[in-house]
Length: 307
Image (cartoon, rainbow, N blue to C red; front, side, top):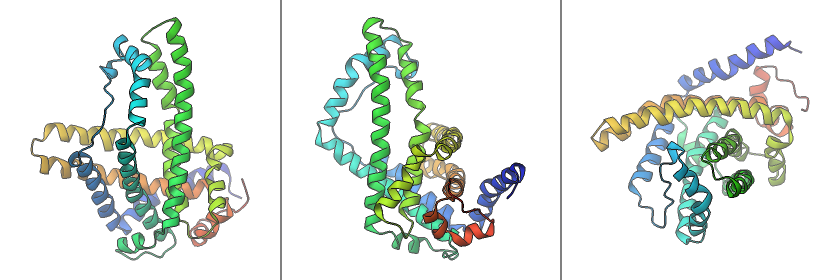
């Protein structure tokens, strides 16, 4: 049994250093992420989205007008969206895009960590994805989205009741801060869903049981919250803010889109790889995951005791 210092050193080695090594070993993974991110940006820019839209006046300034809109008009606008069939068409399209962006890289990384992938096995990673895995991922993603809606609903109800007695602008940042507390868990749910979905064995319910460990296991919950909170901050800077600056500065559309994507690709690819290794670390005590990646854990002398 390794002492705590040795465990921390091994964790740093695995997450930070080995992730970079794997990215250079499987260089085509950069190509996969670049193409998927470019496709994501192009579709969001080119494909028209019909239906009513939510307009939030000066929300970024957290003004009294913004708070008044959120607590008085936003519920009605949200209900209008939910009763418009085009909303669900858009959500369905976004889910299919999520499947492509998430399941394909997860399948590719699964094959990497099982030593099944060659130097260029992108099409093979796509071909092994089965429809039942897509369905399972849909249920898992729907579950985490439902939890997020319930969390926001509780926060909104409390702040809305306070607004009825004392309409104050500071209630809006309180609501936003409350909602942001769930964001790391939402990202963890989206990340773990695709990684559990591509596991080749295990019953439908068995995988769901593992997925719910995100909330049932204190170790999985807290380590996931910390890890994905850090990932959110890094991703915000390198995948959102810096590419956004490029999009605003460069005038030529067919130059700025690939350039912004090219800047975000290395960081996003690295975060994807680190997240997969974090998943292997946090779920390695469970037999289904351990059996799927038996050779990988053997290389690091991973203990197999339950959490």
